[in-house]
Structure formats: C-alpha cells, structure tokens
Length: 416
Image 1 (cartoon, rainbow, N blue to C red):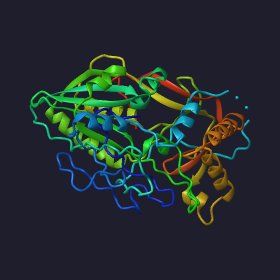
Image 2: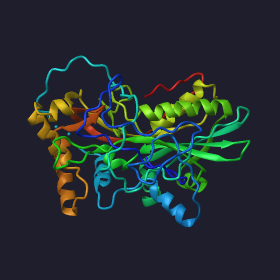
Image 3: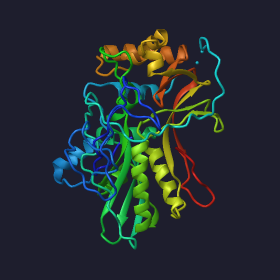
Image 4: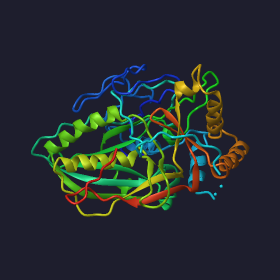
C-alpha cells in the first residue's frame, strides 16, 4: 500500500530477528516507541524512519513544488537497487501445479490464526532504513469541537503511482486511506496505515552474516496529516463521500486509532486460503492498509455513523495452500538448541528474495522461486513472530479486488 500526497509519516521500526518478544503480559526487550497522544504535540526529531514516533500523527505543513515532489516520492517507494518488490510482483502474476514432501501430525487449530496484538510498540532498530521516510509531514490528530460536522471520504489509488502511474491500477493493486473535512474550520485531513520500510522489507527478511535468524524490518503504522491531495486520489483512483460524523464521534475514533496503532504493530502482506472458492478456509489474514481502513469504518459504525450505499472493493494478495505446518518461533528454530535443518531451509528460501541483486541473479532466483513454490509446493511464512511451512497448491498466488460492503445495520464487517 502507498501513501497519499499529504505525505505518510516516517515508518516505525522493524521486527527484530534476533530478540525474542513476549506477547501480552510479558516484556518487550526493545524499549517502547514514543507514543503520541490525541491532541498532543510532536516533540523530538522526526526526520528518520529509525527515530520517528509511531503515533497516528504527522501533518502536511510544507508546500511548493519540491515538497510536493518529495511527498509523492514517499507514497510507496522501492529501495534503490532492490528488486524485492519486482520479485513480489512477478510472483503475484501467477504460476502453474505438483507434491508436497512429507508432513507431520498437526494439533487441532483454530483458523484463521488470530493476528497477535502487543502491549506497546518496540523501538525501531537502526539497521532498518527506509528509502523514503515514513510519514514525514504528519501532525497530531486534532481535537474537534463536539458540534462539528465532519465529512468522511473513501480514498483509494494505485500502489506506487508516483513511480508507475496507473500501471498497477490496471492490476487492481490499490492503496487505501480515509479523508476527513471539518465544516467548522474548513480543514481536511488524510489518515492511512502502511509499512515503515516499504513493502519488500515487510514481506521478506534480511539475512545478516552476523545473525543466525532472519532479521525483519516489518512494522507498519498509522499516518495522519493535514490536507487531501484531490488530484492524486481522483486522477487514477477514488475520492468519494461515505458518511458524516460529529466532532464527538471523531474524537472517540481518534482515541481508538491511538490504541489500534500501539498494539497492532506488524505488517502482514499475505492472505492465505485453502482455495479460491469463496467459502474456502482462511488460514491467515493479511494486516495492511485496507484492513486498517475497514477497522476504521467499523469503529465509526459502532459509534453511530450511517454509511452511504456505495460499492467498495479492496485489494488482497492471496496464497493458496494446504493446511499450514507450524515450525516454531525464532528461539526454537534458530536458538542454540534449535532445529538446524529447518533453520537452513528457511534461510535458503528467503535468500532467493534478498535485496540488491544483479539482473542475472534476479532472473536466476526467480526461476528457483518458481521451482520451490510451484514444483516443490513450499512457501515459508512468518506470522505473529512464528514460522510456518505452507504446502502451496494451484492457483498458488492471486491478486483479488473484491467487494467488502461498508458497514450498516444489515451488514457488519468483522475483522482484525
């Protein structure tokens, strides 16, 4: 997903590949990320992705052609010399079928695996660097007057539009955001959720020579900034009014955004399903920009918002697999007493997606990826700080652009 002209905030940090974090009730070894309160002021330097706070905050204040070009560049960039996103796009273009070698007894599990929330957001690791700074022009979410009437807009545009124009729009690979306009002040705002260190780093890890475990830079966070880039959203996408809310409802939503942003930390690219059939089992849900927008709409509905009856579609990148096989966490696989065979298999798989490949390496590794995923039916997934082996099957990978209705009295969207 990418960001709108108002500028996304600097992306929060990555998931450490070498430090174990405990979920609710435990401690996070990395210190918590600075929090931004609703209506609070941003303090400290926010220029780099490694030091930027992760609250739903940061406003568009710069102006002029240079600032506009910079903000457009931030929308969704790829690292210079990095071919991960291109490999990902080629993968998503689809593949052909064959036999999964060996399985192991699986304990009875509940599907889909619930997305894990945390007590607070860990500090980013300086190793994780974004080619384009996350949410550089953001601001705190303002406190609205209770009597204000605020228009809420659905915003959608092609991913990486700043780089490729409407190219990915033809493939229905879209980024989602939400806009607000205050009737009392006349000001408008954009809010979105996306990766801190670009999509490739959220989808595949780095293999560092000084570490046994893969190293992840896969945090995502909310970005709130003043302004709506009408041209950007209308030109190749969508800008449409979906509901109106009161200032009171907006302020309540803002508090929820703060909680959601501090506890839902890690970006998850893939939806994983048993098959393309509408009723097929979902093994894992993605956690990306569209899911944040869907959660926001649902929160507004819970607060009493009544949505207009319009069609709303969202992009999903789906892997098709048999029942996933749980492999373990970082310690059980890569620790001193870990499973060396599984550890080597995971590292070998992710090596194919390493950044900064030569053209020759890129095409050679792409053929190896096809061999691994299509012919040998194997894909390794990192989800909730745990590793899974996915026995892939036809049609393997697919980009879908399916309708998910806006919430109303007859239909309530339930999600992450």
